[in-house]
Amino acid sequence: MTTRLYSHDIFLDHLTPPGHPERPDRIRAVSEALGLEFFDSLDRVDAPRGDAETIRYAHPEDYVTRVMAQIPEEGIARIDADTCVSPKSYEVALHALGAANAAVDDVFAQAVSNVFVAARPPGHHAEKNTAMGFCLFNTAAIAARHAQRQHGAERVAIVDWDVHHGNGTQDIFWDDASVLYCSTHQMPLYPGTGAKGETGEHGTICNAPLRPQDTGDQFRAAFKERVLTALDDFQPDLIIISAGFDAHHRDPLAEINLVEDDFDWATGKLMDAAGRHCNDRLVSLLEGGYDLKGLAASTAAHVLRLMRG
Image: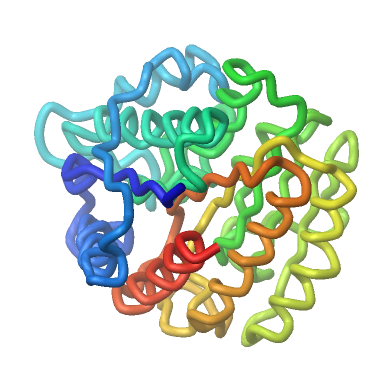
């Protein structure tokens, strides 16, 4: 059994303006980091093009139509001040969700031990009806629905350690008792959601906000006290990680001071939980991370832990 890596050169083709933090160089940095000899045993697979119909698992038809209508024939168009599209953005997004859904298929088939998907753009800010925060479609939410529809998963947990709260994932599953959404994130910070009191209609939203300048000590305490406890209570059939690495101390968009060992530790804890509850089924999806050195080092630590078990 091995760790599978899904990526694809097409993820370089979602273009953003000069100086934009969510840029193709993010994928180049991750690819370079995972190209070192430590990662020779990774099972590397090109991300497949996803079925466009699976977008409707998380977003209504009119929303998909609106996003597609904003894809330009050339150049770069803005959906909002932060969120951009270029001519190949829709195809890029289809490959991101295709890889996420294939990863879910892999772990349910026990084809591999676990999977990391190195794709962009990120997805966790995309609400049911709103593209925002660099995100077009909510890949983690689509993958969770795919697990339920195609593999009969009764309970799916999404654990999001991106430094920005995944308002989109929370919005999509706010009134859904079959999906647990747990998030550690800086607060206050964009997008302004994620207070502890936001628990959803059925108590299956678990937010663990951190304060600016918090370190790994506070992160680990929040993770143990809230996230891991919620997972044990929920007993999921699958764990999906929204793996943003912008809580790294080098990142320019936030003020949390995590280091690579913190991501290694959190990965191990989620692997332990997957072992207890869901036959080790764990899929990790790249979200944020905007300092290239911090992103590369953190991703390497995360994937190395997935490989080592």
